[in-house]
Length: 111
Length: 115
Image (cartoon, rainbow over all chains, first blue to last red):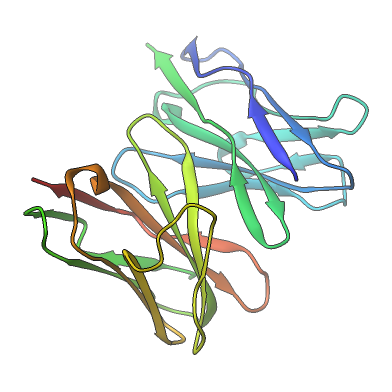
């Protein structure tokens, strides 16, 4: 079975500084990986997805993630945090059509 | 495009009663819809997968007689929590899968509180 592990339950950054949200996956074959964001009282929004094309995936709102097979990682980054980025972020793997969610990382952005 | 709605967004019910939650794909047809449950400060757990016109497939540990799922049309799936108890209080989220992309589009969620 595939799974994802988000290494930090909470990350706090200052506005304008870089964001790094870490995710490791376990899979016996090349997985489909996603990052979703959940703002309070709003639906989950897809930030980006990796489906075995380019290993560096660019998403919406300036986010990107790099698939590193040797490290089994799919970390999410953004060069400069904005206050509106404060939310819960989920790393997700597709297992046979089902989405398996990581535990989530709460991102706080300080002014 | 690819908008999924849920109704109601918030519901309070008394213990022992049943509650129905609707999930609609507004601008696309969804042959497959998914129901998730999210406890406070926790991740989403898949409860069941429903395909239009057939019985839902439930994940291990989810009581199919308690969480009734109906997917009668390509744009509507319903989740009925029967004989609700306080431990059923949670955030229920649906998603719908488009035919062309297999991407899941999520609804805004329904917060259920059982008193």
